[in-house]
Amino acid sequence: MSDNFLLNDQQSTRRQWLQGGGALALGGLLPSMTSAQATWPSKSIRFVVPFAPGGSSEIVARSTAAELSRTLGQSVFVDNKPGAAGNIAMSEVARATDQHTLILGHIGTLAVNPYIFAKLPYDANKDFKPVSLLAKVPSLYVVHPDVPAQNLKEFIAYAKSKPGKLSYGSAGNGSAGHLAFEYLKMTANVFMLHVPYRGTGPMVTDLLSGRLDASAIGAAAILPFIKSGKVRCIATGSAKRLPQLPDVGTVAEQGFPGFEMTQWYGMLAPASIEAAQLAKLSAETMKAVKSPDSMQRLTGDAAEAIGGTPEQFAQFIAAEQARWQKVIARANIKPD
Image (cartoon, rainbow, N blue to C red; front, side, top):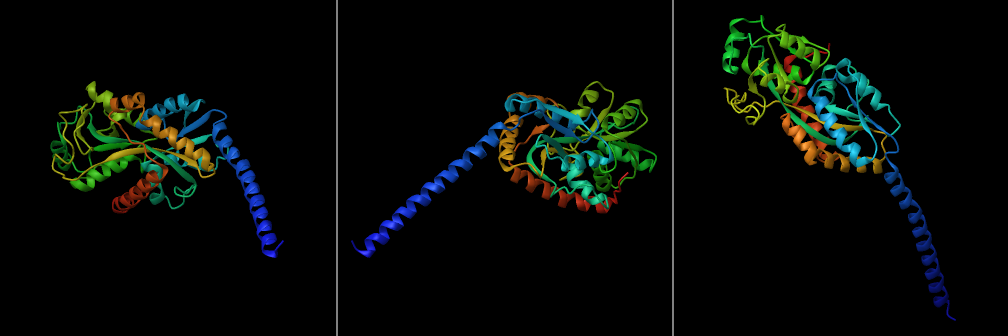
């Protein structure tokens, strides 16, 4: 028997052994990964909302949680944890390691706080993994019925006739409502007093009572009060008129072309989440947002269901950070 034959036979045997061992190793790994994905979630999931109850964030979060509870086979419950412009909740979830805690990301906590606070207890880009963009909610510019303005042009003229004497409220410094009104003030060159609150709910209470003159609020939270006549909508921040308010012009239509202001909400997981779990959560969340029931709930509140991959959400966050960093610097917005 030749030496070449023996060498070839040894090499063939070695290849077979390696291939067999590799298959065994891969076979042991794949079931482990599949098992990890299949067994998650193994208990209830806490979906933290970093704001007080009563705002658009609550509507978006509860709509998504209801659908995920059905598709994931585990309860997904909303836990409101307001305070410090969302920083308390964001910091807590950033440190979570139980794989069953999520948070509702928002224009304020992701694209504003990094530029108004000298030091944050969390890193918006490193401490979390984007799951999916959930929804966009147009900001509606509203006034108390006692304000003698039927539309945006009349309101701006009225505000200019009383510089510094009108007040507008928001859910807090750096909140979406604060940004929306500062954006309008800069665009229209008017001055009004800003009154920050601890959440949308208490701010709306004062607006309804007449202690505030105006506000910019997510459509989902304020539409019922507009329809009941308790507040008057003078403009929408959306690119197009809303079906729910066909007679109300957009800001762009009323003299400020290109103006658009929407709040947005997305789901984030702590950076510690495992890849298989993130993949499963993202897939189920995208389906949940686009489900007929969820679409119906969100559309009824003038919210636009979005969905999308983690990569798309990450790109969206980066673009929003670049946009609002400029507005914050120009308006000199400071934290509470």
